[in-house]
Amino acid sequence: MGTKSLSNEERKKRKALVNRVVIDAGGVASVKQKLGISRQAVELWSRIPAEHVLKLEEICTKYDRHYMRPDVFGKFPGQHGKSA
Image (cartoon, rainbow, N blue to C red):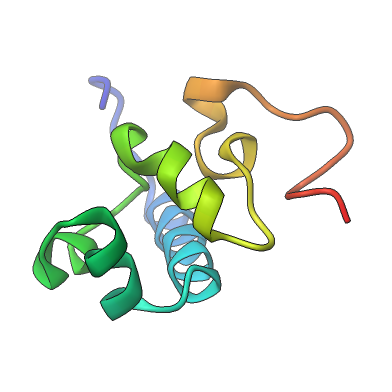
């Protein structure tokens, strides 16, 4: 994370994104098992860690890498998630 401080609104948006992705991936228990990390690690995410994005993209049905981390993978033009 950079030196720029996040507003409360931006923190809430990031946490909501994490929650949507985790739910789409089957919930915290499923994510922790598939990624080989602890439940606490998943629950502490304030954003999707870049090192887990590609694996989560395989697990998710709705969200892709561009949605999860546009700061790393760039914004996908014209879409917010996986195409149907």
